Length: 163
Image 1 (cartoon, rainbow, N blue to C red):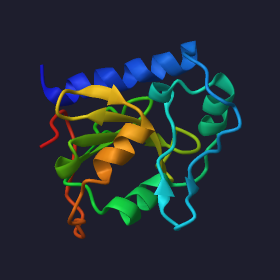
Image 2 (tube, helix red, strand yellow; image 1 turned 90 degrees about the vertical axis):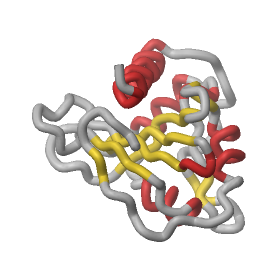
Image 3 (cartoon, one colour; image 1 turned 30 degrees about the vertical axis):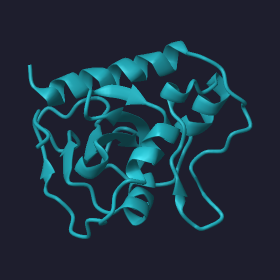
């Protein structure tokens, strides 16, 4: 089984966990935001033990977080997207890989799932060295290790492989 299929399985496992609910955190945490230095702050996910109220707020997110992610950490090294796959899935997904950080960021569409994707919201983070879901704080630490931001966008791959 390819790594991309494993990642998509993990992605949908996390999606199920969101609907079933896990853990508790303070419910006053905001959606994605900007820090005092105008840098993008990675939003918490189910891996952070986000409360049901917080997850509900994230589900209503209307901010396209992908450009904010790229502005803060540079272009990813690779992108796998299912939005244009033949037989498009019910919930399209995008996984971006930052090799220097050993991190994959999973994104899902903002707004209605049907029709063209209007933007992406961060859904989760995976440590690519061991394919384990990690918290926003751990992801931020890994991304902070990137020394040279990539400026040119990678080609978007489809199918089931993330190179």
